[in-house]
Amino acid sequence: MAKLVVLISRDREKGVDIAEAWQKRCGATGVTIIDSYGLGSLEEQRQSKELPMFISMASVLHQVRATNQMLFSAVEDHLVDSMIEVAQEMMGSLDNPDTGILFVVPIDRVVGLAHKGRK
Image (cartoon, rainbow, N blue to C red):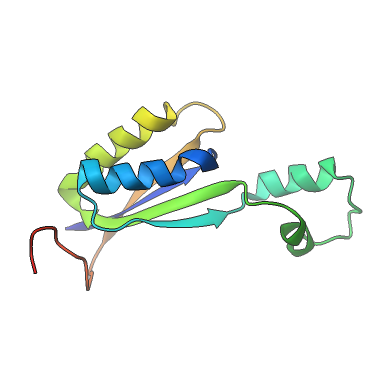
C-alpha cells in the first residue's frame, strides 16, 4: 500500500538536502518541496513588525518570507521508516521544539507512482 510522507520543516536550509537524501538513500522516486507559512509564525512576524491589527494575514504573507518548507512524497510502505530516520538524522529529533513535524497518510489509490528499476 502506498503512503504519503509529509515533513514540515522549520529549517528551510535543510529541505533540499532531506529531499535529495529521501531519493538517493531511501529510494523515494519523487519529492515535492513547497514553501509554507505557519499561522503562529505569521502572527509573530506581524507583531514584530508592529503592523496595525486591521492588516489581514494575506497582507502579511506578501511582506514576509516563507518560514517553513513542506516536503511530501508518495512512496511504497516499506520506505517510510527509513525516510523518518533520515529526516531525524539530518534535523535532530522532531520531538524538539521548533524543529518540524512529520506525518504519514495512507493512500487508497495512486496513479503514476514511478517505480525504480521498472519501466
